[in-house]
Length: 270
Ligand SMILES: Cc1cc2nc3c(=O)[nH]c(=O)nc-3n(C[C@H](O)[C@H](O)[C@H](O)COP(=O)(O)OP(=O)(O)OC[C@H]3O[C@@H](n4cnc5c(N)ncnc54)[C@H](O)[C@@H]3O)c2cc1C
Image (cartoon, rainbow, N blue to C red; front, side):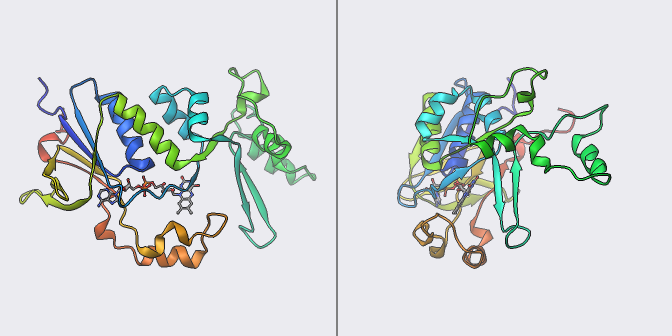
């Protein structure tokens, strides 16, 4: 019997962050030994805006064993080959950050180093021309990367753009199937251990205290100015609005952290 084994995990918040944590923990710690409880408030709801991702999301979904087609259907997702930054460095400037590599390394030297050296000798086409993801994006094309390095498509990489609320709902189904318990309610207080100062339990309105050895909070107290209705038709906000929202946000009310009580901290040499 391992005395450091986690028996109860409490996750606060059921947006993408909370359900991603629940899915990963239930996949790898579940097996009926660890009780995982996720608390979320329907009254507060989730932010639920469109989610542009980067390629590690594929690794995450892969670790969960999620079928890509099923996931894309459920989240109304699409493939994404890079990120375009418009007016980023200066007005009129654009930069496309492709997912995937530029060209091929030669004798251990990165392609972009060779490109930059060659550029000092003669004029070269844009480096985008040497990137499969950039060129496919420009042409509005997509294919799965080749499985082996002999093919240029091997260097190709991608991510997704999907509906964040649907992703959270998808991972909720996944997690509940693996035994995660969902508790609807608003966390109104946290109980701290008088000695260590770590969070010992959380108090849910109208319910009992929920205790656990590991508590992870993914809930952010949103100011009223951070309301999704204040987004413009593109779902974007001005720099001033974002700055104001951050300034009115009280960090003491955000527990974007995990706390583990002393008995369950890794011990030196263990
Ligand atoms: C305009 C905009 C565009 C964005 N675009 C992108 C993007 O392209 N790519 C990207 O990766 N990210 C993007 N983000 C950020 C991303 O959407 C958010 O970081 C992410 O969706 C937040 O998920 P979350 O689970 O942390 O929070 P939320 O979805 O807000 O979920 C919070 C959860 O906590 C619960 N909760 C809160 N308080 C309590 C309480 N007291 N008791 C109980 N439960 C509580 C809520 O009920 C909810 O379940 C964008 C954000 C905005 C505003």
